[in-house]
Image 1 (cartoon, rainbow, N blue to C red):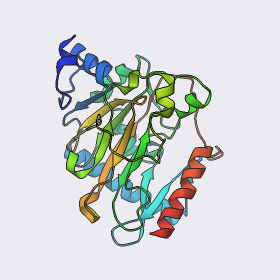
Image 2 (image 1 turned 180 degrees about the horizontal axis):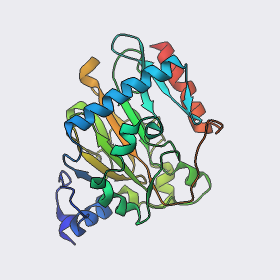
Image 3 (image 1 turned 135 degrees about the vertical axis):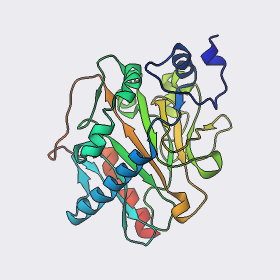
Image 4 (image 1 turned 30 degrees about the vertical axis):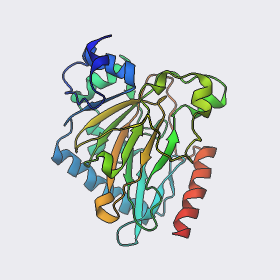
Length: 280
């Protein structure tokens, strides 16, 4: 057993010029890493201002999707429209586009592959989530899932895939946030299909851990790992939790456009969110 495998699950690493053998061993064993303080407070504030600008722009344009991917519109603190999931942000913000290409992230890209690229116009692009627990919220939490549904649909195991997240707000076990089952990225096909009911299951698991973060932290987790987002018990401004996810890709280039069709699972999800907002 390597030193990385022996470290406590609460270990917070420092991101240097390279990813160390110890850090790689921890990721291979447990399916996640936390790097402390990678993004500066002023950079987080600049991105937050960009989100406000994009929200106002897309609201004025009456947009409900970008490149075929739905926008998650809910209600904010004052009951007004509040955008809770921003896809493809780096295509509409020079600030985000520059940040996700900063050289400090280069070692993380090597975990995906030597030739990994930022998928600005692929998948859902650079996504920013704003979870908020208020009346009328469309996105206060997210149920259990892995990120290999498309591969599972075709009866094949997903390959290695990493989610890289930048965290804007302090998040502890008591305030909700990312929960995952360490080591579940090593599971077999049946477990990945049936261990949990996808997206509708929210019940805590005795084996889950809370991934606690501070503003500016960067997390990496294997998308094959079972994970969920726990709802914050607080209501209002204290419940705001913002996370930016950057896709690093090595497969064939498959860009999206305004003519791209909305995937079926996104269409179903949009209908469910509209129903929830209307009920609340």
